Length: 156
Image (cartoon, helix red, strand yellow):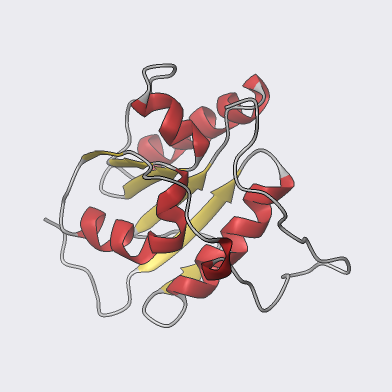
């Protein structure tokens, strides 16, 4: 197991719909008190990806392969509806440490703690959660804010 400093560095990659962009910002805010959010080299990489388009999933796979090639020791978490697709057998992912379904986004701190403790495998989604837990206070670098009105989509 790697020896992590007090505030492990977390980096996000987001692929897919605007809901994923909103949820990545939510996860950043949830993690900020306990972790250092960075845009470069990190201890844990969180890939928030959807399966609505093959392009989003393909880009996510490319990033996963690049991270693994450049940093063998990094922890890679895939979270989102692509995780639910893996759980249902519709998709496969390799080279990742932990795969979590959409409902884990509001509990991303638990997902990070698990991967830092060397947990591996799949965390399928539970039933949809109350969206009241999914609030963001800022939209980094944006003039227009996203307003989340649904969870999931009809294509996953």
